[in-house]
Image: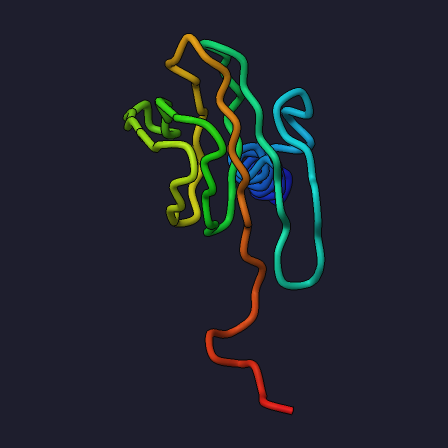
Length: 126
């Protein structure tokens, strides 16, 4: 019985880690770390026309669209949503797991500023 419980726990942990894949590790073709410190990680994502990624996760992040962007995001349950942004537009995305796809005939280029821990308003004046 202990073996079944342990095996079940291992399967749950593996499933959770599969859902929370780091895009830089699972899709280095499209994602590159440009900067990282204890507060943020800045990713540069580039997709060719009609290219797809694999399922991966991001913490909450600021999105800076370097090109016009027409993308579809498939969520773990199969639901899809589309995001359209113009070059130079800045947006916010909550933490999520998704599989992105460039719907355009043109390259997609975006900067993602991923937030790390910390508490809002925690900065102290000097």
